[in-house]
Amino acid sequence: GENVEQHPSTLSVQEGDSAVIKCTYSDSASNYFPWYKQELGKRPQLIIDIRSNVGEKKDQRIAVTLNKTAKHFSLHITETQPEDSAVYFCAAGPNFGNEKLTFGTGTRLTIIP
Amino acid sequence: DGGITQSPKYLFRKEGQNVTLSCEQNLNHDAMYWYRQDPGQGLRLIYYSQIVNDFQKGDIAEGYSVSREKKESFPLTVTSAQKNPTAFYLCASSIAPAGTGELFFGEGSRLTVL
Image (cartoon, rainbow over all chains, first blue to last red; front, side):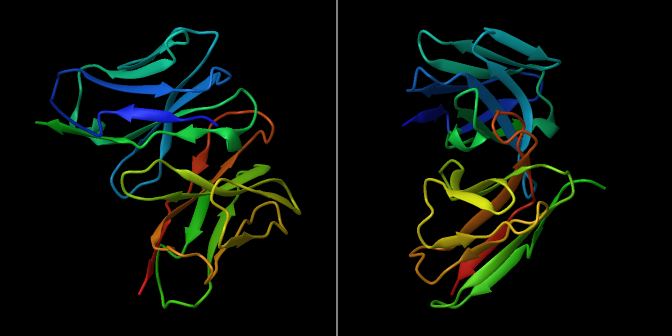
């Protein structure tokens, strides 16, 4: 089955700096890579996702890059703000079947004002 | 206001008791899921249902049971057979049962076994 590793487990950055969270996966059949953000005491919410036919996707201050050869994908947050403080989860899975998604262990990101 | 509602938010249970967590959605989604979240671990799938009156075991189904009698409801029962039930439980739904896409989560239920 799929195995997803996520690093780092905790990350602190100064407000305005960039943050990068990395995930690796094991199953070459995985084609769908979402990122979820969970603020303290709140529900996880999808912030961005990428499919294997795309190498990079951007949405304002967040971007995700995918390297299928190396089996890793990363979340980049630029110009970080206090509201970016949260736990971020990556996941990997096939194009069909949310039930087949495997989640990473999460990264707690803290933005230092 | 559309979304997923989980109840109760906090629940305490004595060992040996069964407990049922409620999950209701008004998004008209076909697929619903139950995940367990433990500190330092990713979300792990307990059960999922792609259509009414049908459900499948996920990766950690032992000690849990579900039902899907209505499209909008997917309750989870944590039975006394679950060896380590203290955890945070998340319910989710999605539009397309056969595809992959956004999971819409509830706010979770925290179960503590005393």
